[in-house]
Image (cartoon, rainbow, N blue to C red; front, top):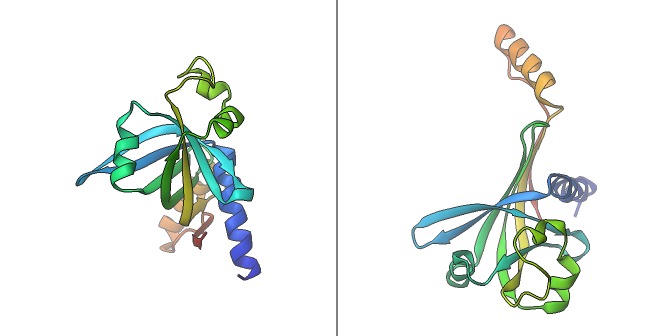
Length: 161
């Protein structure tokens, strides 16, 4: 791995942690389903975790097809990450207790709720867009439109994870 590749991977992990919420996209037969979820970034483990509820459809969808996409977006700052990976679901009670925090309290009374599961995403690859922000981007796009050039509005890279 080159220094640039490692730097791009670090950027992906940093952006995901900063944004914190992702749209989890699963397959339901031929249809794709998306739902927002609070992400727990496990950079040292090369994993993105979520707490999920065993009574929800996403668990069944992942059991049938573990290939997922996570889409992180901070539109105000013009920062985005799209990550593809493989999902597994477990009833690891120690990990549930470790991850249980304020966002989880919106859905469950405690980490001891028997319906909580750990959703573990192991990344395959990602793509990120990291721009200097909305105002700067609009100014650069306007200048490019006037001059007939393409705007340089930040970094966009595909990254093997």
